[in-house]
Image (cartoon, rainbow, N blue to C red; front, top):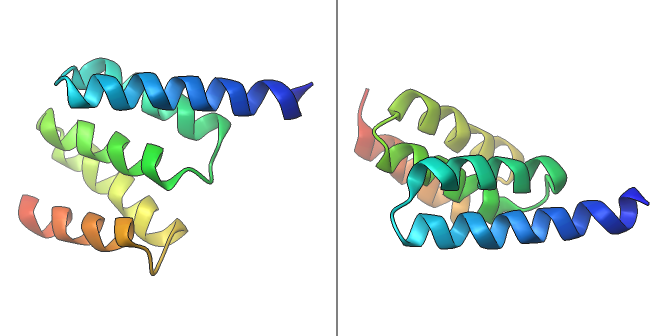
Length: 92
């Protein structure tokens, strides 16, 4: 059952969260993108945009933690490179 339900929940949560991110609704994007990643921890985009949502909400410490997960879990990807750049842009 989980093999059928989890991917569907993850996809729906990601689509909703990504849409919320694009419309500037970062508080809800955080919730939905976190859920998307919880149900599919191979979705680098869910993790990355979860971090971006925190960054746009000025929650830099939380954003950095998420970006570090992107770098650690998905090294040598475009998202890891972007996460590193975003961490540098936020400063200390």
